[in-house]
Length: 291
Image: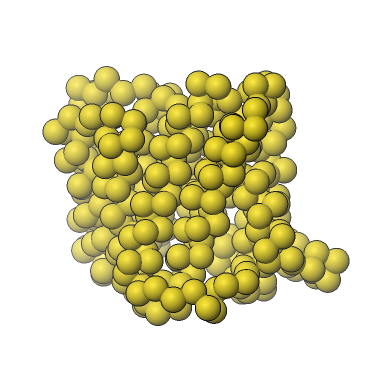
């Protein structure tokens, strides 16, 4: 993508700004739900993101080989499914809690196949955080919203695994650009069927473009900049701050106040994510350009 090599910013601020950009974008998205609905909003955001990435990256679709198509198509479908389920969750539960529950997906990938006792601690921490949010823990959260967030986490786990395969056969921003195209194809039928686009105005289209920039284009650029300068483990530890950033953005922009137990749940899942990263064996750089 043009500008990647000329983009200069210290890596840690890059990651922090990327996190704030994504969560700020999610707050904007939730503000569009009353008019466009969750399905209409996610379709608008991913559709515009796909157009922006295709124009900027200009992938040579006609030159892709069969192995590249086999990798990038399921990757894009996982990306679209992840975003669609997350927005469905966001329509029902606070932003900070949706992101916290969704983080179970990448945490599961980090711990998959591990047989070390240290990792049991991270599983227990994450499990305790989820238990604090569950209905039997005294929570009044929407159960379907929680389920959507956990399913989004499962799609995020698939996106990470499939993203590694795409990176092996289609390196650089081309994989994300083509993947976003198929992500849009996955969600657009639901967006159209929901009927929210019947209320689309130039102002809403401008808000959708800002959402696409904040949630996809800008954080993708910032994350790519950080990954060129940071070890993947350090990057992943910094990304563990995302649930807290989401909770703060939810409070500031959406006036979503969490209870003490819910803040504790956010902290437990963050600690599990950071701990699993610290004790994990060396792994390839994480995929970017997700939620």
